Length: 220
Image (cartoon, rainbow, N blue to C red; front, side, top):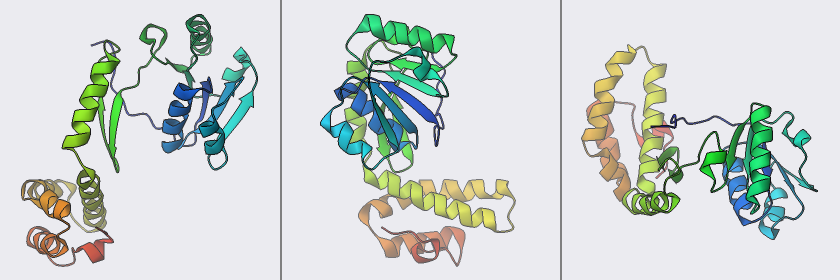
């Protein structure tokens, strides 16, 4: 295995995207969803990107890229259709010790982006280490069918339960069997079915009084 799997916190981080076309637009959308402050340098931008920039932390810089654009950036994504140019930007990033991804050109990257399925705070990712992006996308489509929105809702409920348990005078190790019981006991199915009464009854059975959808602030 060449790549080190990691989930990167880019909340509030300054990120650079070189290229304002369709691919660059998709990269910007993902960065913004993850909380990044994005600067896009390009001679032209898609209408979609211009619209997105009206209501998101995106700065559109309409000119040719220069190495100085790297200054102060945490992460760089290169997304143009000129691979010679892309390689040069990648070298600039390496010189500046930046994290850099070049779209569809793994050998010029120091990290690659997996195909992802997002369900609330649950992220499923598939990487082929750059060997076959098409296969990664095919696997992603299979995961999208298998893992529906109920998984995000279930995770949100588990998060609320965890917060409440941690706020009480329990030894953290005592929580483990409780979470395992919730996961193994069919709670996910009750969330998927929108069965609020069933959820409340099961929470009371496993956790005791005081654990209901309402007290946890959980909305189906």
